[in-house]
Image (cartoon, rainbow, N blue to C red):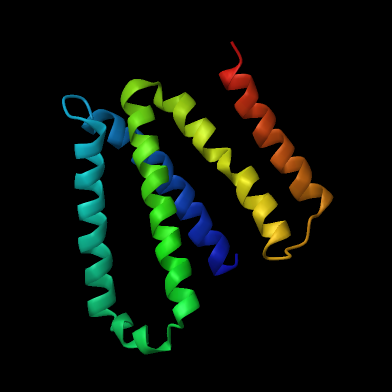
Length: 140
């Protein structure tokens, strides 16, 4: 198995566990406070990884464009998490997570258009199934 596939599978597992832990953790607090605690934890772990692994030495290699793109990614992540936590606080985590994961359809479209990644029938069919599954869940 290629390393990136293993990383993707581990990401999937941890993301699934994350949502359930967060739902329990939000029981008596606001979504924003819960997200603040989660984000602070992430900040400390990632900072430690960058210090221990000496990744900070790569900073001079960043271009202005890369820096702006990473900052923009941080802003969109913040907005995504903000609305995700608010939705989880009020809704069923099974529905919220399924709707959130349908974001893969947006990712795929952008990867085809902006990154010029190949649009294969298999990927399009898989995206269609994901989108259809989300519609089934939210259909009233």
